[in-house]
Length: 113
Image (cartoon, rainbow, N blue to C red):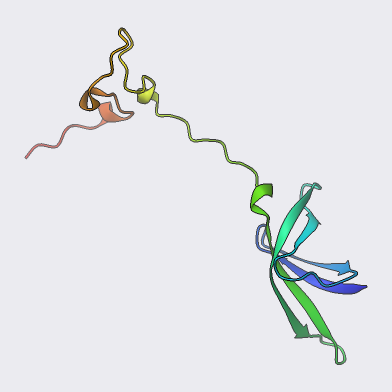
């Protein structure tokens, strides 16, 4: 077994884990998340540093969560004044772009010189 230092860029953590073989750059590894679930990580970098004891070189891995494993963020909420999507509520005819309501428009005075 090879003890490898893992530096996790996603969670900014550092752990020592034992592997049967050293993963290569570009390969994926499964690591346990802080919440206890397993997730896939991509190996970004691999390097060796001399250990404090003897003439031993310790492998280090720099990993980042696989993009498909990252939690999806909720889509941004549509502005409240933009609920008509360019259509008048009373008729099915599109509104001109300048008459389309915009959220927050009522808060600002138009600028005049």
